[in-house]
Length: 263
Length: 263
Image (cartoon, rainbow over all chains, first blue to last red; front, side):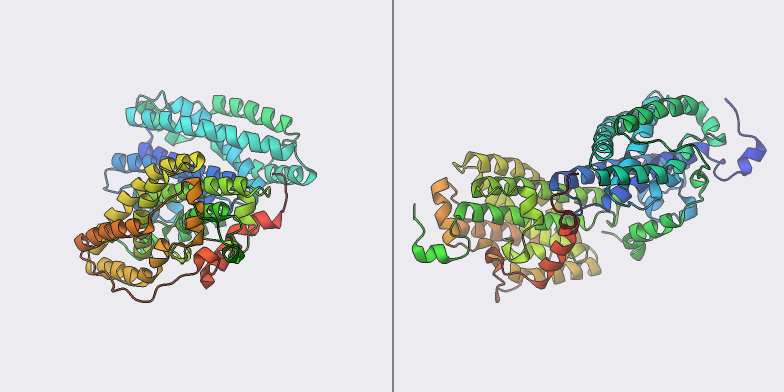
């Protein structure tokens, strides 16, 4: 294992790479779960409304468990609520992909599909971590996200290979989202530093398998994969799009209005 | 069994009392579930946010199943989505209690408690209906609502017997909500007409047991039961507060924007 260099330690978050790593995992799911929960009561059909709420619940639950674990490794006494509700935007470590506004139904489902395909591969690797608590959470989350992937794949197929309008919307969503997918596969000093916790995720291997899954489903959905272009990045180091701040303001308002309140 | 009189048939809904009865059951749960879902992502703590979303999901799921069954008995080809998204406000049959805005956390939890205590007793009776599909739905929903009642009772105790502020808020909620509880126990020609389907719910007996449960929990929560006063009514016949229309506008906008859309 590589001990982070002194230079490396000066980078944000490197002081406690395990904490940092768990924040990334947890924030991806908390933020995406919140975006999905914005559909609550606004779905196009009751069955889908219920399915989307279930997916949101799974993701927020995973985020909560991962932030709880992050808090325990931090040793600074912050629990999952403190981490969810009392961190500012630059302290969030989610990829920018998950913070983008929910958009229309096609945008939501294509984004969910791109994330699910990533998450399933990532969690599958994390199941084998020697960090037992993380392996346990990954194993539970993998079951949930495998269902999410089936659900979002089905929708990508249905929308892409559907009406002219649903196809156009799905293609537009894919075009807009594509440049946010590269960030998911970035690897930096944090990833290297957590290897001593048995957290070994081969980002290149995951990316290659992700491309296969995404290529296969989009092809069957008669969608065209955008050509690679400039890739958005920065979320893992706290640099976010303008949208995260607005989302956090809404998500955190109740807790921040009553700091330390006993409910 | 009493065949509805001709005069009775002129009353709204009496033409098909079973359909009408199932709408009442379904709409109570759909509307309350929607109100609860408005907390999605705005809970004071993650665990509670997740619990409230779960409760919302259960209720919307129950509402969906009951409206599906209502549609089947109507024989007019309306499914649960048509009933949820394409009825106007005067066609909704929920009690006014469940349509009131969610208010603060205390209001939400006290309202939920008052409804849960009612629902558990109602579903317990409906389990014994000779109308097998309804008995099955009631039995499944009873398991869920028994959990909801434990959860909301716990909160009423915690808020009522908590800080000065939480006590004041819970008491205020109880005072505001009290006049909406009487409607839950009304009995009319619809209730009588569905007896031939083995739907026999003794409203007086339920009300008496409800008063015991509510009296017991509120006493332990150091809350004072309001004295009986004028009771709100009309929801069962489609007369609603100003709030339902706004809620339906929001709930129905997506489906109504794309009528007949294939998703």
